[in-house]
Length: 54
Image 1 (cartoon, rainbow, N blue to C red):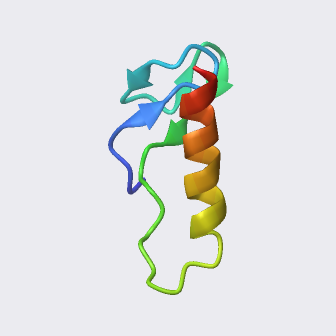
Image 2: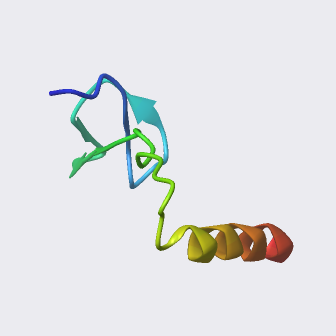
């Protein structure tokens, strides 16, 4: 149990419990930074596209 805070996939709330709304929660740690990130460009494009759609 490395994470201290979790996020519920169903309702989007942050919690300290591993189960919320009857479903398992996910950790909130971001991905580790790597200089040679193969997929960074795709992530940045996806984020930009998501902001444009909102």
